[in-house]
Length: 439
Image (cartoon, rainbow, N blue to C red):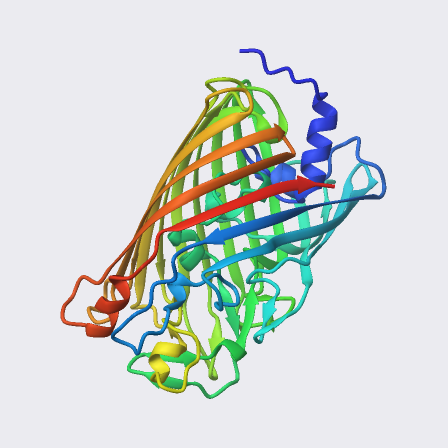
């Protein structure tokens, strides 16, 4: 298969790696793309991207709870409207090579999302900030604010997303929200009740720490690893744990052709994370682990195709987002996030995704994701199922427009639960559209 484009490969690798400052992976080696700048990068480079986004859903009300619209039918992170236009992400990055063995990256986030929603207000922040030393054979050292080794769905750069909305298992189980650890929270049975004013935002899968990583080629085979020790926290939240966060990922790839961010390959990975977040003066065990497999071949070629599967399990620190926004006529358990911190609390899920280039520019995509939250707790178990169909138009590998329709189902397995059943019966389907534009 011919992988030549009208864009030169060095230019492509440099532009894409600089653009997202993160693993822009079509099953690519995310360790290389995230951790170091391309060899031909200058000492100082400025780049960025912007994502104008549109969301539309009907905003059905829940009649059991006095005709309020549940948050699942409202647009995050403000939860005030069911249809909205926003700038989901807006990044500015500084990146380059100090010398052939030292790379650096600084990135700021200015969009409207969970990262910039801190204590109920908009607060732009640092999303990336690390230096990588490549002096040691087989063990590059990355220090700073790092995207921790984890699931492929949490590592991919935004440029390669096929859908605007993330899968439920990634969005709920892997995208951690930080909370003020010293607040004397109220409890509802075995869950802490946390208001939106006590949320310190999400961390974009990044943690302060140190990571060892590298990759090794033998013919078409490539083995990659990353092992990190860090702090459970964010720039806005500070350290939220008195114990380290540990994360590791092992990855094996069979390269079919191409290079860099858009190469064709078959890839399998296994990963593990563990931390002990603090809350209300106590540390709690939090564990996440999973496996994933990807096959991608022929990016921006007719009949180019991709397939992804990932399975994730977690225990401890399971979050059930608030059912409604604050309202004086609703009880606190319905208007506050319920955080289940104990290690006995479980969750798991999986995602299947496939895509096909109908022409060089037009790609059709299909995804199914399943998330089973708190199966250990009959009263609180919820199962999220979503079918998503999408269509993308790739102008270039760095600029595209895409949209998708999401058929959503929320199951409440154990009866009776009048409030939960009422909410689940009015869950909206969602249309979401987005442009990805580099500058």
